[in-house]
Length: 145
Image (cartoon, rainbow, N blue to C red; front, side, top):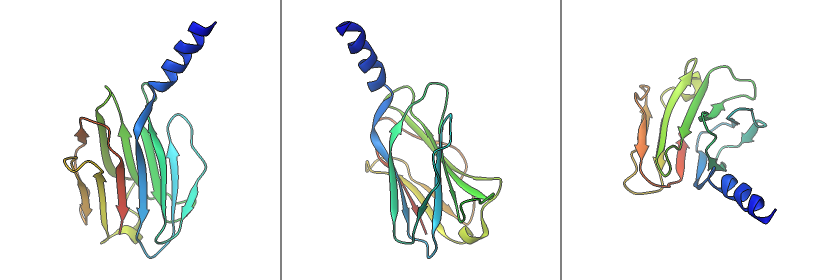
């Protein structure tokens, strides 16, 4: 019994990562965040100057998408996506789904790691292309505006 409990605990621990995913809202308007894996989490409002975070996680066969809009029911979203596999690698990118909300046009959008050598993704008017990768645990910080 103790051995099976130990294995269950070990299996759960392998899906938790050390890093955090952080959104910093420096825009002059409220944004709405929904974290999606195999299910949608509740949508959370982040006022101008506020921030939000959640522990990074790995779900086999599924990436994590953090959808950011300018209303709770926005259709034009910024999507910050990541996956962490094989550990400790983390892969991350930004995209618009289906297109960039007009309130974000002309704004600086920067996704960076807390590790000083983690690649930075900047969205300054043009959508970034490609996925960035980092070889160790790092917080991923997405700064809006």
